[in-house]
Length: 60
Figure 1 (cartoon, rainbow, N blue to C red):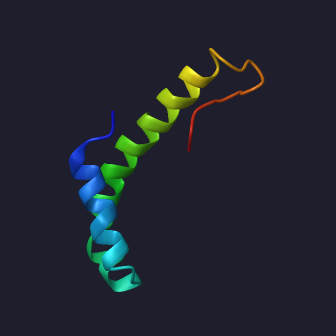
Figure 2: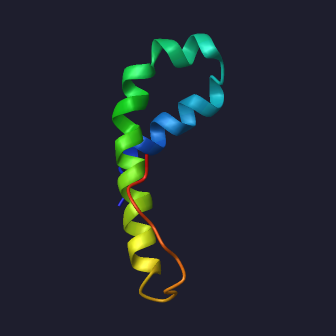
């Protein structure tokens, strides 16, 4: 499940969608990126139980 802190970061990113803000918060981005990639991988794994044509690998 995605953490609330990851959703909070995405909300802040939406409000501050600029290169300067992003660069100042790059470390947070890298931290929360992992959370979102894990969620995506879990979703894909679950979906393959219903649709075998969905293939997935390591999300980079």
